[in-house]
Image (cartoon, rainbow, N blue to C red; front, side, top):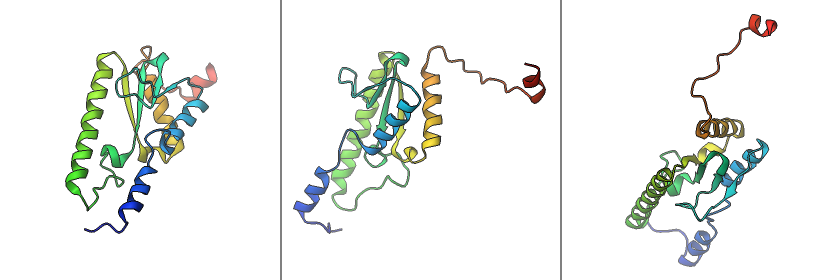
Length: 156
């Protein structure tokens, strides 16, 4: 299939795609900040330079774009033109992700991936982030708290 844009226009479009401080990344950071968590951005001393790092919890968060990192949702499509190029590019991206995550785990870091499509619903994202952080925390108790019934609450 022929590209509808001229090479100059396509180059201009591609130059506008940012690798850091993307909208999904800003949404995740905003929610973490509202929840009161302290974090660092793009720590270059860690493998893969995670988008968000919560040092207290030893949690590295990658905010992945579904298209670039091949999530498998509706945002994940393969362009019709230059398919060999794109397939190679996507394979390299996913392999780099796998290697970075493995290296972080070997350094005793917990790794979480937040997908672009999952940042659309702020309430759901906030709950997911809270769960991930509690799970990553070494003091996290894996057993869920038993919810008190009405009689137990009234007696407390």
